[in-house]
Image (cartoon, rainbow over all chains, first blue to last red; front, side, top):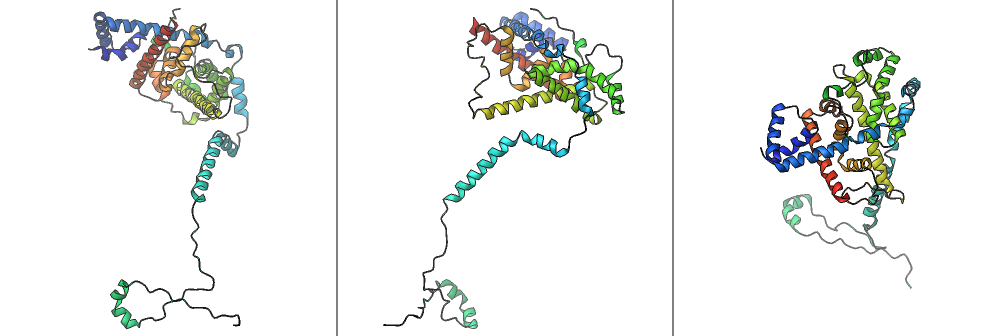
Length: 169
Length: 203
């Protein structure tokens, strides 16, 4: 048995919480031969003594001058049950600050995310419009040379000038 | 000052003074609609329950409210109570859980108050010398208990301050007794360490 194994059991021995008689004997034998553990055991007892000294001070409560809780409990038991919604709101009331904070964070995140994005809108110059290619290959030819046409880059759309409406001078 | 400790057999629940009717019978009567039987249970346990809650909750009014709330919950959930279990640990389980919930809510409120100028109070650090030199022994023990992690503090309070047996604590906290013993040993070692540090600083 080494000192590390003894450490936890010494705390139990100091409080009289070791039920195993064989283990108690073993510990006592170790204590008899180990001054460090003996010192530790005495310190444990002293600390425990101070802790248990707290007992007397805390038990003198205001309750002792008051009466029993039973009349108040009985009154509460006699009350009609509260509606469920009220109970739920009472429960939720404690979480309202957190809910508000979460909502604020989410709103801020949304605002930051969508603020800086550029608007991608197609711009068509006034007076110009796109027209489909002028010549469309026949169905038989297009199906025959499909691979070839697919490899070719698409021809640029032809730009058709609008007829002038204003009279020439 | 030496504190005389009752023997293990004396500390087992139920602790009321020689009850003439068993808890199980009273519980059975309450289930059949006898409200006076519940009054008997309340009077049987209220003193002890309030004492336990006061160990966790430092405000007497809040402790009384929590004790009352405990009895109300017990009454409402009595149909869920397993009669093969003992009534006492079940009652204290509800009471301790309510007290711990109250403490957690208060901690959360303190955290929220950090954003205002009011919540500047901080838990005492046993590693730092306290300016209040004349602070008494009881106060120091309370300070040390306050900084021990909750899961150890609960066991220390229930065993060393409230005299529950380790098997009762296991029933109250719904843990195995070996776990409770391990936590108790660890809690005592932590308390001892902090206590010795404090004593060195004072000397």
